[in-house]
Amino acid sequence: MADADPTDGLWRWSVAGRPDAALVHQALSGALQRPVTTLDAPADGAVLCDIWQVGGDFPTEIECFLAPHDVAEATIASAVAVRLGADLLLPDDTLNPTRYVLAEPDGTLRAVHVDEVETDDGTERRHLRPCTGADPACARGPGCGRSRFKPVPTPERPAAA
Image (tube, rainbow, N blue to C red):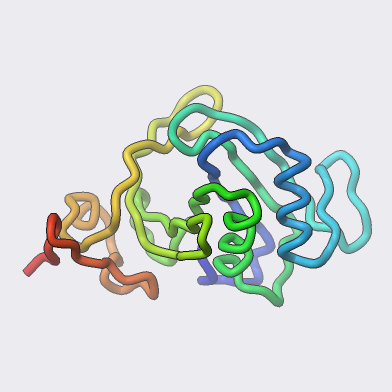
């Protein structure tokens, strides 16, 4: 979750587009200033990173094991999104299963909702929309208003009364 428990050592992200695994490793290594390697080639002090493809609007799945405890996940996700030039989803600090934090290529972090479909290849995420507090997905799960990533009302979707 986005900085809810910085000691868990596991980060799970989804990226829009299909960047090459080497590019993802390079972006992550540059953001962390430490080595990043694959699961089958562990090295001392390295973050282990597994990357695979699914369908949907965020088809590149990234799992980072042995993630460092001394940096905020959202900060690193934002830096990786900038380096990749792609939107990146990371779990937020609520228990709402459709709510994520979107790290944008300009470094912006904001709360969003996505629809999820389980497939044989993994979870596909589609239909990205801002978390406004009025989205029906906000009512399905707890915590949108309690998150450190607050819903942002828009003229099209005013906040719920």
